[in-house]
Image 1: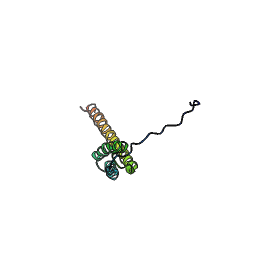
Image 2 (image 1 turned 30 degrees about the vertical axis):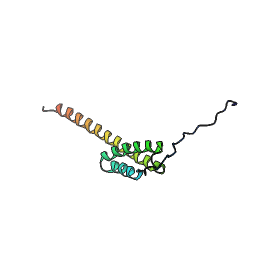
Image 3 (image 1 turned 30 degrees about the horizontal axis):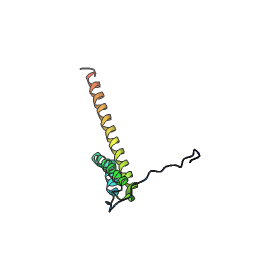
Image 4 (image 1 turned 45 degrees about the vertical axis):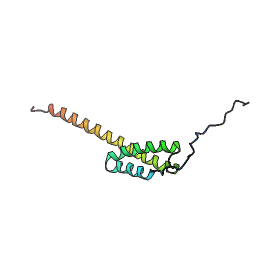
Length: 108
């Protein structure tokens, strides 16, 4: 019988049943950084790979020691993708506003 207080419940991580795959955290982080520095496509790859790898780590099928570096790479990939999308939206707005302003220019 309890007296109304409950102990906090911590999430239980699955224990590996057999051999686990090595983590790819370093690769995810490198792709995330490349997404920030050069090409957004690497950011998308880092985001997807990071999400999949974190699911595998949670399921106990991948080495959990790479969780932190995988999360860092995934976050870099998310930031790279969002910045790229913002850049495209701003570019489109400037193009539309510029085209509209040109049609109202004097002498047309």
